Length: 219
Image (tube, rainbow, N blue to C red; front, side, top):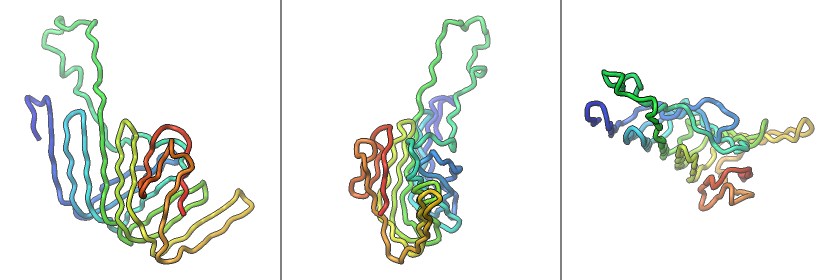
């Protein structure tokens, strides 16, 4: 950590995590993803007072429960797992308050966050894909996935392959039809979009392009 009299702070922290919680987002039906992710691997946190970069390269551990909310009609919103705090105005006041003027305008600089999660998904992790209020895929498997989230642009990218070893698919149409299917070992998940201008799917990467509704289909 570097600073000049506690101003112009920059930091560059590296750690080797051992079964560490690397993501903890509360359940939110309007968010694209949430849950708790435990991992073992490398964590790199660096940036300054304005920009924060979090890079995680790890494999998942037991107790991991990750939810991908494909049914969310809105774009992902900023999550409050990191708060950027501006220095107290009281602390910045000069000793002689008469030197300050009421005409001074202060502007809060925009902050930027990039969260990158990349690594090996192991069968110990529960993966849940919500396709509707009561519909979804729940299973365990293995693969290599990468998720990148940027704030405040709320840009999200997901890519990689995931092969299910076991799981189930719950399907319903209102209160009329309700079916529960068992997923065979070796099944794979493929994504398609009905509106590439809002959310595109290319080479396994799901990218939020613009605000608006889009249906991502998992097959």
